[in-house]
Length: 143
Image (tube, rainbow, N blue to C red; front, top):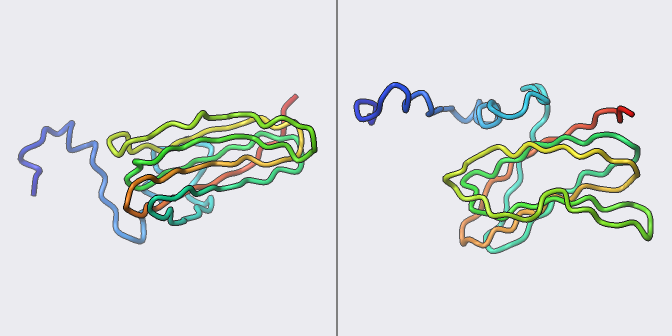
């Protein structure tokens, strides 16, 4: 319908997907660490709330993850919390606001030397619920 108003280059930036292919399509341009066979978890971020996702790690490895929030307009941050007492929490990604115009897949990795967890935080300060899609995997630590 709007095709006549855009150049071919602009049209090539649009992707349309039906419900059965939406998750696969949403992550299509993400890091090549993942394939369409990797499971994607979908959750809802309630309006005016903080939502966390935790990835537990019990051995030295590299944790890789991808996240996408439909419509973004949330603050996203990530940190590693060690499992042992007296350990120091490490900020992986300082909390930053990602606006809808960015509409990106965030792909990150973190080398872990001890057991603990990576905690992703999504702060939705809007009055609309958001859809969160994420997946992760571990790779053996390469020393």
